[in-house]
Amino acid sequence: MTSTRRCPSLSAQVRPRLWLAGVGLLLLGCSPLGGCHTPQATGPVQEPEGAPAGVAAAVLGRTVVTLPPPGPTPLLNDEARAARLVAQRVALGERAPLLEDLDGQPFPSLAPLAGADALVQPAGFGAPMVAGSNLDALPGSRGTGLDGVAAAPAINGNLLGNFILLDGKGAAGLDRFHEALRRLKEGKDEDGKVRVAMYGASHTAADIYPSYLRAYLQSRFGDGGHGYVAVVRPSKYYRPMAMTVESSRGWKVEHAQTREGRADGFYGLMGASAATSKKRSYGRVIPGELERGSAGEKTQYDLYYLRQPGGGRFKLSVDGKVVATINTKAKEVTPGYHMLVREAGPHTVMVEPVGDGEVRLFGMTVENDQPGVVVDTLGIGGTRASNQLKWDEHVWSDNLRRRAPDLIVLAYGTNEAVDDDQPIESYKKQLREVLARLQRATPSASCLLVGPGDFPIKGADGSFAPRPRTVQIVAAQREISAEAGCAFWDAMQFMGGEGSMVTWATAMPAMAQSDHLHLTRRGYARMGMALADAIMFDYDAASVPMPATDTQLASSVPADPAAASSDAAAAGPGDSSGDRLPASQL
Image (tube, rainbow, N blue to C red; front, side):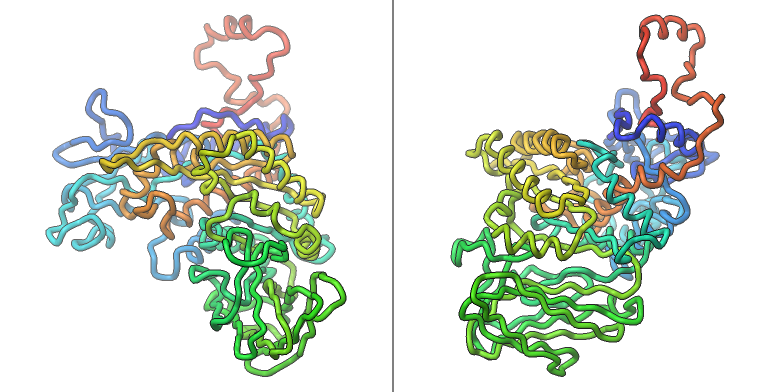
């Protein structure tokens, strides 16, 4: 998908700083997510006349899939490129092929097309690539038979995903977050931590794109620790990437989406609590491979729980040794905390009720004692933004203030897309209330809304049609984020707009699952890459040198000098569009 948007989030002072980067990117040629590619000597493969972009075309006896030309691209300095590699490896795993290399070059096609000699031609990216040269195109891979022949042409999943600039309040919505990163970089941050709280539904709960963002930011600004993790699994699908959470039966998990359970709203930071009075119950958090090289000299654990009348005690163990017995009994309901510091991990932390009253737990944070970024993954499958209105504001906001996030991300909308019986004005009202609560709790934090991706309706005949409600949700989030001073990132446009989910699900490798709702691990990694690039766009733009005062931006130099005078006359006085760098040149 080609974007023709300008960059309204950039101030007039910042835009001129992008002229050098823009020119450089144009000379190299860049992918939808900013990968720059040296032009090839081989001429471009020509499509049959009238063939639309994104469809297979027969060229020189081979099948070629052509993607749309690139739109705006991120600013990638050496630090950002190195961080992208680290984050890809974390999000994809040690053995999976990466999406891009250090130069931002997409790896050879993973799409097994019509035969091993099939080519993939990314428009504007130079010579076509041979699909059969990649391991994923070997016989028996997804979409191929044992003879190595695909049933139908498929788009290379590595090339999917558009770079989308922030909307809503754009970069202004992230000003305080960017300033916090600068203070951290300069060693001036008061507590040496920049924290990000990421709320959302199943896309967020999968912890893949949040893990990408965590690894990316920590690579650039320091490893502040893993962040928040539940000490009892809120669902059987809860699997944070860097931690293993084990828990016994007997816990009662409660959150705003459960039909059974108390509606008291005492759900804590993430919006989910686990309670039990049984002595044999336990919850255990085991660090994964990603956490075994913990940075810093010490690790700080902060346990979140509920203090309440009739509350019981629980034992806290580290590496099998009981280090504290915590009493949750209190005269009134209030949030409780217990902090523990140990030598740098890895450490296994375990909680066990004594059995003398109900113990209601929320979760635990894990941080290193060195400066850096911390990302809290706070997603619960099946949630809606309005579920937060059912959380007890006193308990939840106290938890949130203790975390002191510099950026709060709300990634909701997919579940709301099926609420056809709810008037869109009612949805808007609830979303405004959610943002108002966030701003009451942490008025100094930046905020970012991440819209839903494409979510088509599947017909009885197996065909797919657009879901109108999703477009309404996206429009509402864009409008309200601007009202509230938040940035907005359009995941649907990132995917390619309405109908793009089908392409993602049938790509090679698959970037979305067959339910046409969730992405694959690779798809979420691509989402994390695009989101991180968008978040950091204006931060990195601020470091691009200003051009000389007599330098004229490329966008203000008409290609046809004869047309310059007529264009100027048509513009009239006060027209400042000439000082903007077109998105296609960023």
